[in-house]
Image (cartoon, rainbow, N blue to C red; front, side, top):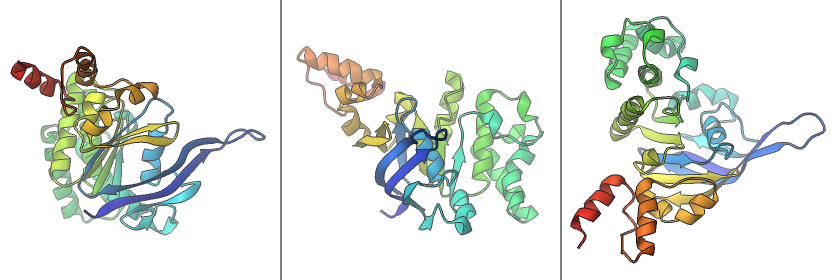
Length: 279
């Protein structure tokens, strides 16, 4: 598979007050992200996961090392908009992403600012709103929408830019369970359509639905693999200050009681199927 993102020896430092040491948030990360893949990045608060997201989108520039998005160096000022159009970003708080008083105008904001033709803008807005199931709300005021609906409008605004990759930085953290479910379903649908998806999250039930899971701790990637591989390291994950999926925790406890449960039982559905077939 071809890579859309390539990271080489990435280091990022936050400056501190004069005379104090810098805060090193990312410590020598190297990895590739394949086109069309769905990668979940999880870590406790302060682990560096959101910093990594902003580096991928070109909002931050590496202190050392390099990030390539479709072969564009994110630190190259001449290609910053190429990077951001290729790798769009959805943030945690939808209220911070909405700029207009009408939903369809908000979705059109990005394409208008890059000089897209009016007919093409209309086509993009219609498709983006339909993709997130918000077409019937096109003339509504964003502030009248629920949190989940606002986040779907924010996603539509990114989709209207026609990105090849979308980085979701904890997009469901401020939503109720229904809003979380709706947004995650849209994320999975977009990935199924071929958009490379990077989901920064602290919800384990979201991470298990990805193709690949990265666990970051103190600025370093400590686990990398498919969900079954990563969540088989339950003790290591807990040592990093994280929980594991409910089904994984139950499987660990049952194995200690002598019940042989396959390592790929990582979701509630997997566990129910196993228990129903267990003799």
